[in-house]
Length: 100
Image (cartoon, rainbow, N blue to C red; front, side, top):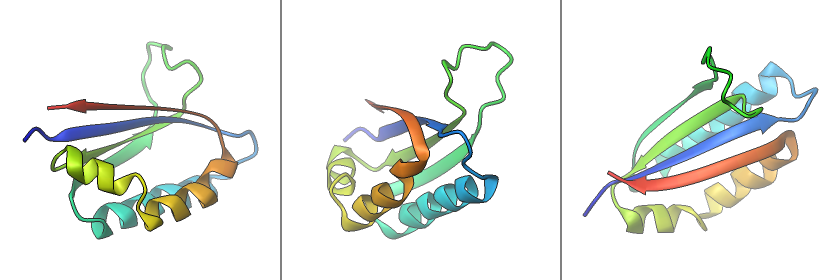
């Protein structure tokens, strides 16, 4: 089976502190280490000089072992809890998944 890359682009709401952003990405790291089927997680702030980010300021990429692992992650209670805590700080989000 093909691995799945789960890519999310984020724009935080104005006034969101760096500490809050760091907490959100730290929680994602914890999730990536605790939910089966997540093989890799990386995140960071945009630093592209091309100015093609359409307002998105941060991104993360999770690699899932297969589509079943991704599908199990989406409704997972830890992911749902994360969304409840993170989404109030996010103005805009774009998520794309693809096979590799």
